Image (cartoon, rainbow, N blue to C red; front, side):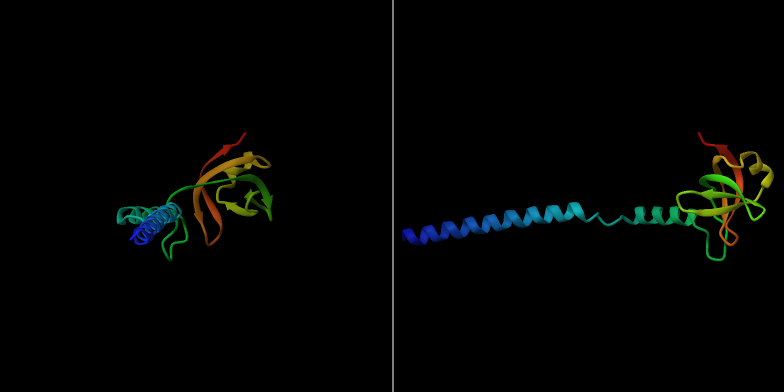
Length: 127
């Protein structure tokens, strides 16, 4: 009878230990896997992406974006050269950009992706 109780106690202890480890493992996985987005969050995220990217067939961003880089002359045109991405953006208004040639600036405007041209809303000199 004592052996039976001892085996029963060991079996119960092993079972409890297994349950504790399983719940701990499940909690760790929940920390690593983000919770699925609620329908409201998914809708909000989709609206933000839609505002940032043009609709199909539309080649210009809907919302003004900010670009930083140096204003330089390339092929007789003034462009904004982004030193990080190594991309050059044409600037649609040379009169606005001319005072900033060779300087680091922040340009705000809409991007025409067909011609890679920024429709300048504002230009600011960066320190």
